[in-house]
Length: 289
Image 1 (cartoon, one colour):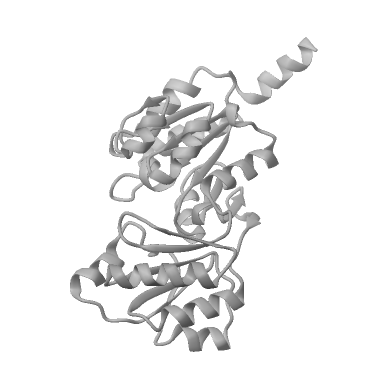
Image 2 (cartoon, helix red, strand yellow):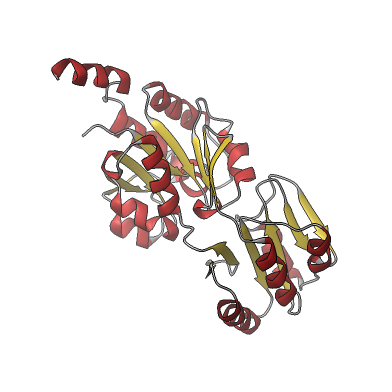
């Protein structure tokens, strides 16, 4: 099988646990790109975060960010954007601000958040979680509702942090009852995420592959988080890093080293080192026909 796409979880597979890109990882991806193989970095985080990392790597890698809601071809060219409407955003924020919660309205260019004083342990979790948006502009306001009335926003997603689990359950029930065309999930760290309907990493990757005329069978996926399960399971080769969740490991074809042990570089060596450049393979195919 000829593999034409390498898709990698940016945050848990490619970057180290300290959020750094190793020089050997950069060299490995350069080898893949130079062979004409497409590279896509996917992330549940924002485009701003993904872009800051992706531009460190040689070649025009693709970005699938915001859990599949924002796709950029060659890093900077948006080809797919799925948003929450301005009216729904305002109404949801108005409802949420009646509760004790920290809200982040996330656009590809900036995050807009309300100021709220939680106990120290909750504030620390919001500020330092690996899902924090520290890579691009953040604007804090006393009332997001008042801000959105003056400056309407159609965001990619809305993140909400609650001090009280019961409040979170009540909010989810109310939002699902009152609003269509959204999906709501809660990650292991307690962050509630509101996305446009049908947004997922799987749908995002399939959209990019269709555009590039590449099949899943020609795709190698390196995943580590629960949200990666579907694309790891259905890839031509689905690979889990050693630091991946059990759900990902259970569906993977094999397990590589952890992100801190340069698992992606190992994948490149084992899968792509002997594969000829795509241009050469296409020439050989043409000559045979």
